[in-house]
Image (tube, rainbow, N blue to C red; front, side):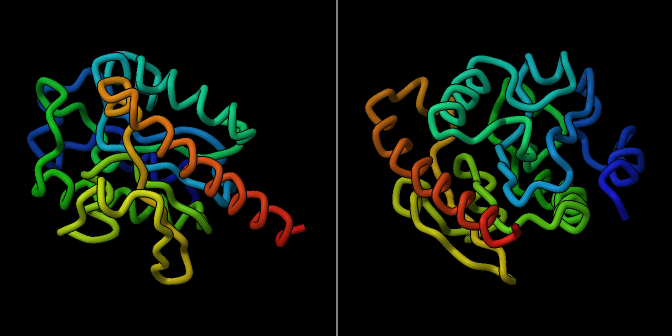
Length: 187
């Protein structure tokens, strides 16, 4: 199944209670053939209004970080672990993530990324280790079924804790290097 078919199938998803409060579902955007996928926690207010991931202040920071790392945003795929905005921008609950992970898995199958970056604790717990603490595991590559994954800080966390930007930059340099390596290998 291709990515467009996956997105069409879930365009009106009502599988969990989060759908009741949404303006728009935010399935993700970017290159459907990208070897690099970023997975955040969930849409915020700006994302809910526009139906696009990472367009608010945190998204602007993510775009600047990608640009500094020479990773064109248009060439990667960006999504979230939950596809509808949690009330008050709270962290997605385990049940919500467990429901939405079906959509994410279908996106993985359609895109077949070689590298996945989890932004923040929720996607890191959902995809890498339910007991993971982002402050302990960030910056470390983990391999699952031939896919390399790296957890790093969510850009919203960096806006609240600017002193962590240095660590995030180290992560983004490693992501850039791995991305270039994958691109070179596929040529």
